[in-house]
Length: 109
Image (tube, rainbow, N blue to C red):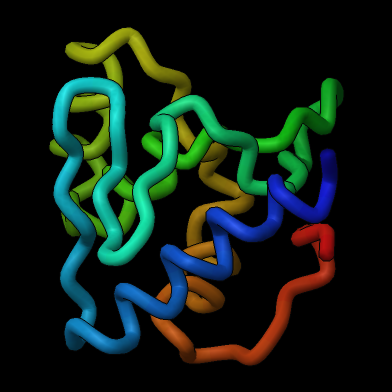
């Protein structure tokens, strides 16, 4: 359900903004954002610019916030077997999640 997909991205944005830019904890396969928690595989509703246009999973976006260095981000995603946010999407997605911009056109809901 698309509304639910975008809900986890909005929750991540609220968490990051409230915590001064800190990423939420990932416990096994769960992203913990009090009072809620979401699967790391929950779809964020943010559509990739790549050909498939797939929505990124939440865990991938959380790691993007957590790891400031691109090399560390890519390495951690690879270690977990997760996809990475495409280079073309990273800045817009980070700007949205950290509150630099109010909305982004590639996010649904």
